[in-house]
Length: 378
Image (cartoon, rainbow, N blue to C red):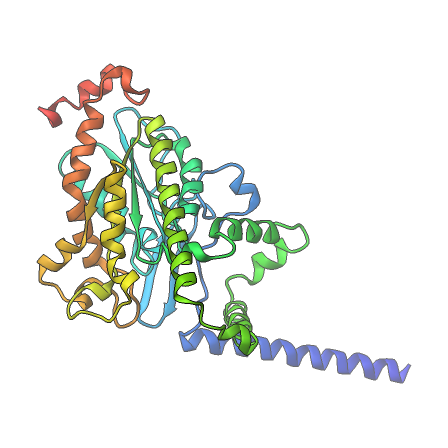
């Protein structure tokens, strides 16, 4: 009996020490400011089956990935970043769906400073009754964005803006597309036995620190032969790179045809990396020419293409004025507003074209709705 009592006391003592250690570690990590706590979560399987967006609905989060990069994110009931919208498009509204990666999502800027929010603000200020939906998902490229388009088409967009980021070509080298990785994650965290635990720990500093350590350990555990593979021959490297371009071209054509069949206008937004602003940065041949190449590719497919780089260069701003440097390479609020200004003429023209569309050109507007637009298009 005495032995059992002693074991019980030691168990209680060790449990108490463990809890104190966990709480102390959690507090220390939170105070440090270098470990994110609250973060935006992607949808569960149950939500995925009922909404078009890729994020858990009704989130209101201030992310703090870095002491100098704090930003507020709200997710609406349909799983998209930004203000609330109805699933059914209201009468008299022109809907615009923005597709892209973290640059479209607006990573590291507040809700009002994202591209979609600024575009909507500018168009509404001019009297256009529009809704601009933020369909951006970080870490994605065109194969993923095609999947998100098929889901978002239920919202009946009149115009789609596809934003090209300069990592979109090399991202096609990933063994598992991001939309499939999200599917695996969705299924894992939706398992009955794991979901309650995940819901409790997902916004703790310890859990996020564990994820960071695991990723670092996995990278360092790669055998040297894998970490530094033999340099492929220039011919094989060229063939791989060209295969990514062929895949991008095929996906862009599939998107163009998909939207054309549904009488939805497609605009192509070519967004530059910060390396193109200011003194010329050292870039290899493929990177230095890819912005011009993708713009030519889109135009040859008959897709209206908007160049952002000239607007950035003509503004006189430094790259630090336009991007979150030196902390991150994403655009800052100035970069988004200047990007929106560069897009506005083409987008305004597209909105007017939708408004003036003949009644037999699509099911989006009624005679009464078109009459309500008359002051805008005279």
